[in-house]
Image (cartoon, rainbow, N blue to C red; front, side, top):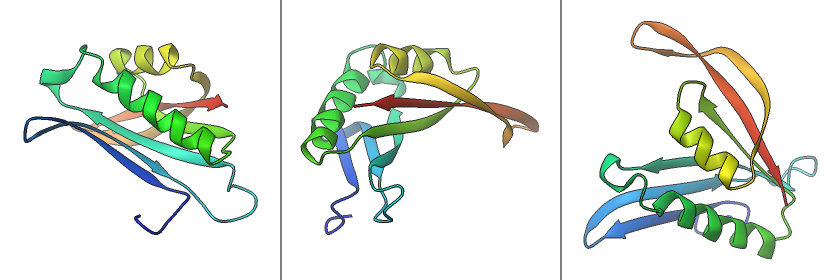
Length: 117
């Protein structure tokens, strides 16, 4: 990722402990070079403390500096805390990906969410 200008990886640390990350996975193909797919994680102990918000702010700044036009992600349909964070950061629900995951013996839907810059 170090040499890939279309991708980025941000981390949040507390001392020496990793408490969050936000990865942008880009593409160099002409049709999708304007967009990145985001993958985020925040430790349970850091949730609700602004870690995710700050990671998203920094990633959006990076994306704007690279003239990107679209940020997108998926989230399990029952993850209300994450959905609320994404909506707070300006993401909108664009669709449902039915039975896209198999978690603990159950099929789970995901929401497609996106944000235009």
